[in-house]
Image 1 (tube, rainbow, N blue to C red):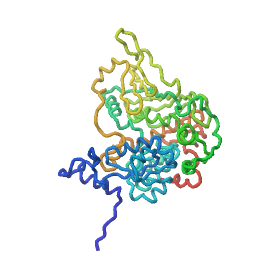
Image 2: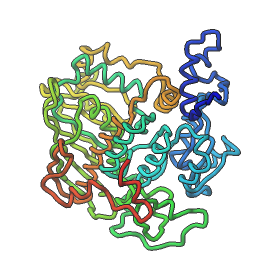
Image 3: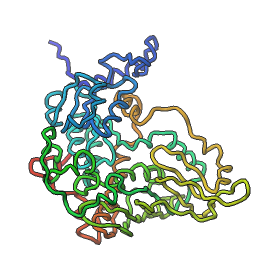
Image 4: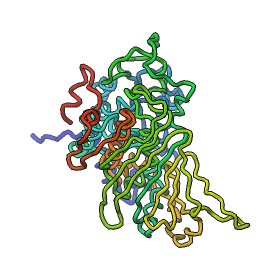
Length: 472
């Protein structure tokens, strides 16, 4: 009697997409494993998505993942469907709904190929590791995790489970990223010794008039909210509307502030292409309206990095967030107008400035997928070809979907997004303590501040969630 080995849907979809690539008699959209303009990809070839978090940012992520017809949602998971994305539910009617991601996997795991995690930072890790343990590809919004150790565990899990991963720093897959790489190859981004990274304002989700220095008073839990599941592994504080649905990002217990939120976009290119890795020293320079409940109204942090090879000298990141975060450039980097008057470049409200050792010019870029510019503008003439941003290619979401189908790789897998997140988490520790520290890149421990070192592990998980942290 001949036995047939059962294969998972994930393996079937990947093998099918790879197999049809070489069959030229099929329509092109089938040969590429992609949908045509009408979304005409056979259902068996599409990536089935389990979507965890469908409100807020999820309202944009889910349609983008499904935009070319190569993926479709089969399960929605959210702790508050009353506040969740009505637009998403209307666009994809009839999708099964779950409050608990674990129940979703138990009941529909065999039908799910990949998962999107678009939830508050403090539950990213448990939702992601659960998906990976079940062999699912995972797209996770930034920052990847809520603690340094959680990011380390997901980096290990990526190696162990071999699933496709992508962190949601969308600019990493963009013409702006390719242009940055071109400039580096052309020598424009050589010998960088200082990076000024900034975001103005600091907490657009909690401005000066909303500031508090203690946890908010208890309020009735909305009947639509599964608050225990919303808290996940975090300590279950008395419910407040300050936490859900949006301001959670301002609280250390749930979020990572502006550094964790926008730092993933602003620092990304430099961290990746300059091979910064993790710092050897972090300094807390300024914390306005400091307390240990919510993030500062404004903050300044300096991180120091060692020499990393030829053209990669010792370097520092100077992070600023707040109302006066935008740095002032030296006049030697100003541009001349038609009359010869020196005019400062417009730096925008978020971005980074890379300073070369020779100080001939600076490299400026905004956030996300922004292209880079050189100042003074006359310097751009020497790098005209490298400054041309490439066109075409997949966006961040579709590169994830295609990688799930066996077509190519993602650009910000956890091996890339994880170390970037760890860098951000070190900055968050400095913000929380309002203290600096030294960091050992080999042992990945803080060597001169025991309190800060203990914070690398993050908060102790609540009872019932410990098993996610024992191993990957």
